[in-house]
Structure formats: structure tokens, C-alpha cells
Amino acid sequence: ARRAILEDIVKLYHKSTPKENISTIIESHYDEQSQFKDPFFDVTGREKVKTQFVAMYEYFDTYQLNNVKFDEVSDEQVNIVAEGEYVIKGKNIKLDQETRIYFNSSNKVTFHNDHFRGTVFESMETTPVIKQLFTGWRKATGLVGDQILSRTVSKE
Image 1 (spheres, rainbow, N blue to C red):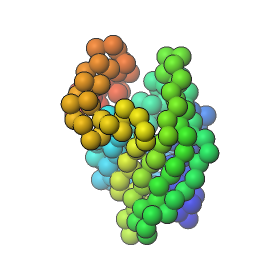
Image 2: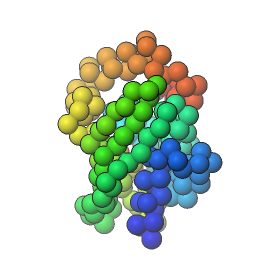
Image 3: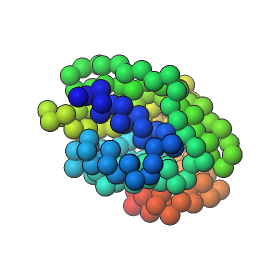
């Protein structure tokens, strides 16, 4: 059962997954008070988690995970390790991605934590001033142009 959940989570990182399936995946597998965190956002609540993936679908040209592996860390945690490939406004970004997924006793995701290893994004997690500069730069250059993403940013 857990492997099927993880495979569904991987689908969230593939632009080929139909937009309407995002809601189904999140509602099926994420706890009502689940948390999503990456170097840019930290949101709590299933609806806000869903907003992150809908915004990614609408804003990115394309994206996918390659060479996906599941690393079971404990009964509560499984890491999805992959090569992430993202295209934004024609620019291709490749990242060594680790998505840490934490489950509760009902097998629902309580914490979804994206890490981009060996990148400036990883530095942003440990150096708040870098995160502030990057977020400000994204706003100034219009890289937060999507309305859903803009609403999410303004609430943070």
C-alpha cells in the first residue's frame, strides 16, 4: 500500500500527470494538517499543500523526476531520491532531489519535505539571509507571476 502512495507522490512531479489528478492524489494520501516544506515555502494544511503542486503545474513549462529510488528510513519516513528536471520559461534546471515523506499511523502523509542537495537551494535551508535574497529576487524579476503562487507567497 505504501509503495502505491509513494508512486502517486512521484506523479506530482511529472507535468504529464493531468492537473485534475493533483487534487485526487493530495486528498487521498495527505493528512488534513499535513505540512509541505521546500527551500521556498513552508505551508500547513492539505489545501495549501495542494496549492503548491497546482502552482507548479501552472507555472513550469515541464518537470519530471528521473532515476527514482525509495529509501525507507524508518516506519514513519521514506525518502524519494531522484534527479529532478524542471523547465521554467525555457530554462532547464537539473537538481539532485530528496523528498522526505513522513507518515502517521493511518498511513497518511503528515510532512512532505523537499531538499535539493548540493545546490544553492540547500544553502538556503540553512542560511535564512540567502533565502530572503532569493525570494526577493524572484519577486522582483516576476518569477512569482502565477496568481496562485503569488497568493501563497503573500500569505507567508
